[in-house]
Amino acid sequence: MSDEGYEKKYIKDAFKTNWIAPLGANVDGFEKELAAKVGSKHAAALSSGTAAIHMALKAAGVGHGDIVFCQDLTFSATANPIIYQNATPVFIDSNFETWNMDPWALEKAFKKYPNVKAVIVVHLYGLSADMDPIVKLCKKYNVTLIEDAAESLGTTYKDKYTGTFGDYGIFSFNGNKIITTSGGGMLVSDNEERIAKVRFWATQSRDQARHYQHSELGYNYRMSNVVAGIGRGQLKVLDQRVAKKK
Ligand SMILES: Cc1ncc(COP(=O)(O)O)c(C=O)c1O
Image (cartoon, rainbow, N blue to C red; front, top):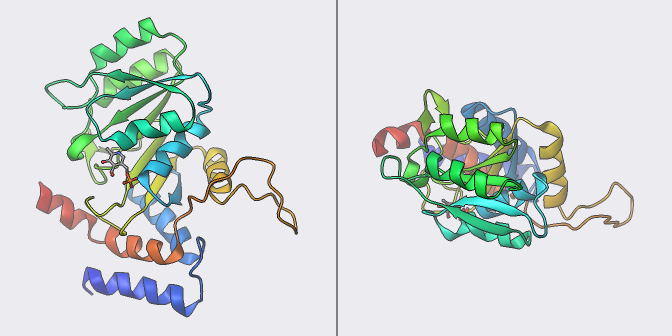
């Protein structure tokens, strides 16, 4: 079956089962299939990569007045969610070899800002950052590592998929990405509890009650079951796309 055929099949399933909402079999399936593909334990399908970065920061406990290290050579969507959380980005230079975060500059920043709350490293244009020293530094300083793998789904570093080195990884399915759902994102993590919490925040933080009750600030960030159907079909051609890009 062509890739278009798979996408149509999953979309048809969504209509046939009448699950057009931001939940359903395609959302669950896309989360499981993408997590399995990259080797992460859990995933939350969201409305965009930007939303996924926002939820990763919130899950990491980033809030008012916190400092977050952010790669400087990147798209603005990497940094914007830091401001959504009323935190302050401190930009870390990229290096000539990887075009991504320079571990030497990161170490210098850790010494200058010992109370930093999180680090966002980017794998720009599908090229991996030099993850070994970056992971080592984040562990040494006990700081949450978020990987903006929006542009690097399918990229590996030492045989491991980008997006799975840190505490959280995010992917984008925007129209200009290696696979697309027209728009969408995914947050991956091995932390089941944090992913469950993100799903809760992303569906308006609706408490378990018969009436509408919200004890926490919520967001309308969940991916629709129709969009997730496109994602499931697209995931089947990811390896072909990566080979073609290479
Ligand atoms: C590096 C990077 N980060 C974040 C994003 C945001 O993703 P989205 O457009 O799905 O919100 C993009 C792409 O648009 C990106 O290229």
